[in-house]
Image (tube, rainbow, N blue to C red; front, side, top):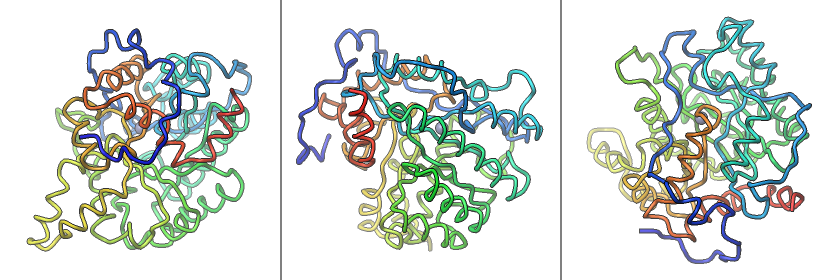
Length: 386
Ligand SMILES: [Zn+2]
């Protein structure tokens, strides 16, 4: 089932924690994904970790269990700086004290979790749904606050953190402005786009200027879900099922509208194993007969354009599908910390180590090698820690 095994040198030492002792007790549990949230406005503060950090005062050795030469690279990793938290409190999106897990971020806990999970470097991102901000101007303001804070954290910990800048896209204008600002001043490793902003999904023709700008920047884009637009409360929390449908909708529209070919320099990572896309892609061909979709060949080609992360979907049930869909070289390690607790990160790590569909070579690619191929600028930063 594992494919794409040819070509890459298997010259790295095993992961520091990829040992039988680390695997003992792995129960095949998968990451639960984001904590559930209601689609109400205040509860909307719930799903996406927002901002960045700040606290430069936490000094910590950049060594430890993560192992710079062998540790994981985490492409789906959130944080919230005190500045972003304060903004959300001031705008009525968070209570002054406490709040959901993602709102209780700290640098010290992050580094501790990374060390325990064998994460050498995490690409920090904010995932800010439109429900957090009442106007495009406020969305742009919060994005700048989050991205600037994340960039500060990368500067103070260049071999522990990278940056996927959050780009709001309720309008193409604010998206292009923030893309230009972050690439010209913050030099991110890539960007995060929510699957939809308001009622507009990625792939919508109105976003063409944003896509062109991302294409010009050779951007790597992490597509991140949230509650489905106009959803109503139900017995099933959105993170359980709706999030996966949200990612799938964005990927489908990118495929059907030809965006992958129109903007070939953009590299796409679909969060949470690509949502349902790997499983349901054949419906795109079925749908063509009903007036919406693409032919089977186009589906196969499109699927190979996507990367997926391991945050939440990896299991003996899903991994074989992901291997058949995108291949070993397009699966990237993602923890979804701090939208999930540290224990879930460790359980997800153990599930990967125990996954019967992944041999040692595949695990190494998922944990690190694939990310280094997609983000080559990380290699010298990691080497500086060795
Ligand atoms: Zn997330």
